[in-house]
Image (cartoon, rainbow, N blue to C red; front, side, top):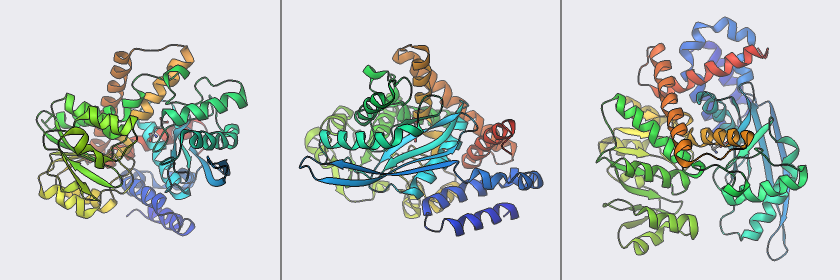
Length: 445
Ligand code: GLU
């Protein structure tokens, strides 16, 4: 291991001992940058480059106090981690989930810098959210929370500064509540948030974008290896918008998508998931997946974890960080799976990633393969700035073009350092180069 990388990781480890997710993300990125760091070690050391890359520019933390339907007050923690804006305005989602803490948001913000750079679009990286859990809350309670959250968040964000969007637990409903309050506080909304409902200036394809983008990326990667989705057995994990629309696009390309899951269990549907039923359960009824077999008239529900036990050719983890561990990876390989492409942020543990790569599985890291969401967010910002609303076809075509471009960027970057087909190295090096160039140009190094 390169000495400079080792020193920075050691220091990070000491200073952030209580932040395992952040340390995991930093380790994955820094270690894979070894070829390029070793080549320029002296320069980067004197610039304190790695130190600057791994400390967020600003962290905003605040309390969020809101009333439930019984009039009882609750207090949650709110955050916005503005990691790096050398490449462009801070950009990244707001996660609402009980697991949210500073470690998770620093990991997500750090990843977002590389992801956004890889799109080739001028966006820096940020992430925010709260440990508030929208699950089981009434619309009114979610609104109360979003209003209180926005009252604390609004001074830090805005057009040309920081443009938040959705993430786990934050969909069009939450962005509506947040956007309405932001408008009240500041007098204008414009493109201050993305993932907006259409009537507030949202973009077509934004809901589908991460899932579709994942499949466009995967399709391009498979093409390079003489493969495609046709007649392949696919498993998606999760059942939010990433999973649902990855399943939809994969099915459109001829795949049979036989499984998905939520936090309580997983579905195996040998004939291929009934997406109309899945959308109704998850997007309309906000129900549990355990209701799928009855609603679809087919499929088997299994309680608990273990979706990786389904035999498949292509596995698309679209739920959350560290959902796929070494045991899962071993089972996938034993069952003949040849591609794992991440739809969520860092859903595969470091050990599982290594195992998959060592066993010849084509592996795409989320910071590249799930960049469709943020790419479409940029298209939403473009439409807002020009006062336009593009058709579904035009937006979808731009999205596909961006995803195909990302694949080739990282494919080239991996080849350049003699590690062809290692898309983890390719993504980190390609993103790193763009960020470092921008920091240099802005005199930040
Ligand atoms: N939350 C998404 C992501 O992880 C989208 C962010 C955005 O659109 O700004 O990339």
